[in-house]
Image (cartoon, rainbow, N blue to C red; front, side, top):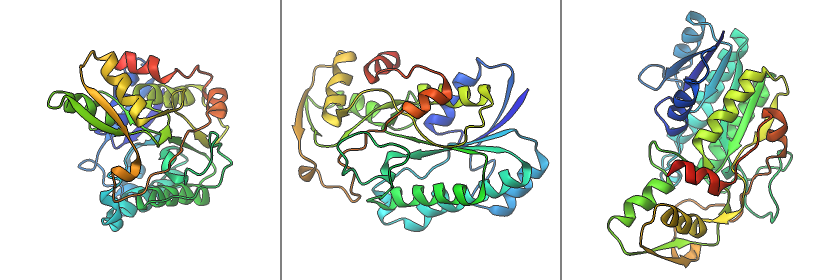
Length: 280
């Protein structure tokens, strides 16, 4: 029986792992959120690990308000970096494998081909910088870890682009969506399956991995497909990012190459349209 701690349990990935984890009776999951375990508090984290035995820690906790982070710098770094350092130290002391979820926002988007794990990060935003700092803490402290970068995450839970589009369609007959930011959507249920497959395999091929659904699209393309799949009648106008200014700068191209993840998890990664159909 493997014992797995999942932090950030009330977020969309944490809830997705909880749903998927029910299919794995040989795994004992402990789900915590900030009210159960404040991972920004180093003493609380050390004590929690000393009083509980785990084989893996899956860190789904994150500060994800990308634009708000530009002003709320201290909190963004506290949750995305300092808390990750705390978990890394506790995992090292307790001989626990850390699986940490990171982001495509660690890249600047200047490439025109999918980013590999060997490409050098160069974040454009506070959010991206805080997530990169968290990765660096892990790499400095641990040998037994998996950093899993993902992109454009959505699910049945929480706030995400798919749910926002569906909500807007209930009020508006026409909306504008940027078409010059290219990436790959990721269904959180698929990411949860990948993470659990890594645990099942007891892989020791530690390091950085990229996971997203297959396919390269714009947010505009994504919105059009969301409405088509859900049979919503709404007109979508493609616009440039300059017409929709945001506090944080986004990478124009953040497609993640997933060849390494396919080998690690020994799974077929679905096309984004296939996974969106499952969602609907």
